[in-house]
Structure formats: C-alpha cells, structure tokens
Image 1 (cartoon, rainbow, N blue to C red):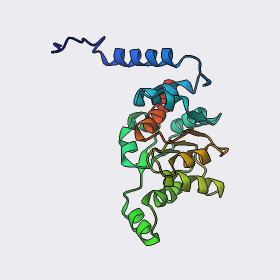
Image 2 (cartoon, rainbow, N blue to C red):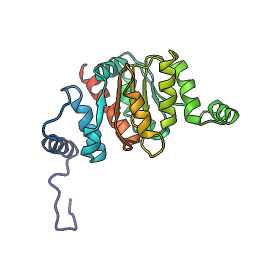
Image 3 (spheres, helix red, strand yellow):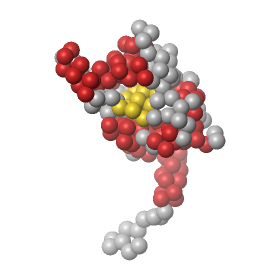
Amino acid sequence: MDFKTEFKPMTVQPQEIEDLSFQIITDEMGEHPFTEEQFPVVQRVIHASADFDLGRSLVFHPDAVKSGIEAIRSGKIVVADVQMVQVGISKNRIEKFGGQVKVYISDRDVMEEAKRLNTTRAIISMRKAIKEADGGIFCIGNAPTALLELIRMVKEGEAKPGLVIGMPVGFVSAAESKEELAKLDIPFITNMGRKGGSPVTVAALNAISIMAERLG
C-alpha cells in the first residue's frame, strides 16, 4: 500500500493494530485496581474511547464479569436501550449460545404507551424488556431515564437482570443514574461522571462475550 504522506503506519495488519493498541493501553495504564477478569473490559472501553480517565472511572460489582459470562453462555437475551448499542454488539458471539440482542425503544406499542403516559420511550421500553429478559444483560449507553427506571424495578423486585452495563452519557441525570446503579447489590458495570455512551457500553459487552466464547 502506497501512502501519499511522509508518515508511515507501524503496521496495516488488523490484528497487529489491535494487539499493538492493547499493549499501548496496558503500558500507559500502569498500576491499576482492576482484577484480572475486569481489566479486559477496561482495555476495550479505553480502546473504544481513547480515554484513560473514563477507563479508570469504571466500577464493577464483584460478580459482574462472571454473571455476564454465565448469562451469555446460558443464551439469555441482551437488551440494548437504543439501536446504536444494538448495532455495535458482536451478535455472532451472543447467538452462538442461543441468545439474541433486542431493542424495544422503537416498538409501536412502546411509542404509543409513552405518548399516552407523557413519558419517555426509554422508560416504557425497559418495562417491556423485563417481561422478556429475566436474567438477561441490559446495556444502557444513551438514556439515563432507562437506567433509572431499571434501577427502580430492581429495587421493587420487578426486575432481576443477570448484568447491567450502565454507562449513559450526558449532562442531565447521566452521572446521577450511574451513582444510583453503583449502590445496588446486583451485578453491574458502570463508570462515574458524565462520560460514557454507546461505543463504550458496546465495548464492555463485547469484552465479556469474547471471554464467554474463549471458554469453548
């Protein structure tokens, strides 16, 4: 490949690029508080965002990674809050174990119910999702109201997710929703502050699905 520039890439091989990126992340991260099973999630979040501060702000329930792996290998549904999260998830690894990736926010009944109740589609989508996804993985990267509604349902005994990956981004209720998630005694992965978003939520789930697949 002939690049019309003085700069030449260190490699153009996809796997070599990824391997080199992860080595750079490991080297620059230095000492950290994460366990051996948590650090691959941190690496992929940083890889997706190039943001070490975001990676360092990750918070894990002690059973988060184990529960996520078990949910995937048991064929549980993965619920995404928005289509952007759904599109980014590596579905072949989920489907390999009989699972599906679903998003409900644009379903007609969700839109109609949200309009009737004068509330967000994100809230109604979570109410619909828990009817189908008991023990599943909830990936929320965009809508703080979805995360807050899921937290409410967990507290009231209506929802029992296998894992909640809650990293919505934004200025209104995003940081607060993640603080509330971190108080729950259920498996969760979140981060502190306003940062987050669909790409890093997807990265966390994909890291766990890779670990699930490597178990055979």
